[in-house]
Image (cartoon, rainbow, N blue to C red; front, side, top):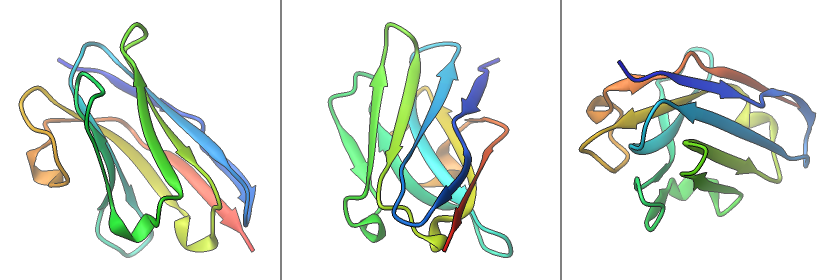
Amino acid sequence: QVQLVESGGGLVQAGGSLRLSCAASGLYAMAWFRQAPGKAREFVSAIHWDGGSTINADSLKGRFTISRDNAKNTVYLQMNGLQPEDTAVYYCAASPNYFGGNRNRYDFWGQGTQVTVSS
């Protein structure tokens, strides 16, 4: 069973930055999704298990960057220029054989970390 533990969420003012972390129990393709109240869970960013390829949601306009440190089995999401519409629970997901933005293709999920951006 793959374990994913997210951290780094919190409250930040508009225009600020946060870095989320997700520690995994192995090497997998990893992704971040987010879910705002009353909305569907949406794709944010994904990274191949070797870190060589990344995919980002077009709506982010380059504000978020995904990276990983395989020596620590940890994936990061650097979020800059945060806006109130970025407020959501952010989830880390992992897959042993899929790399992309389809949430239904990820087998393992973390518990989520809340990000709140005040205006």
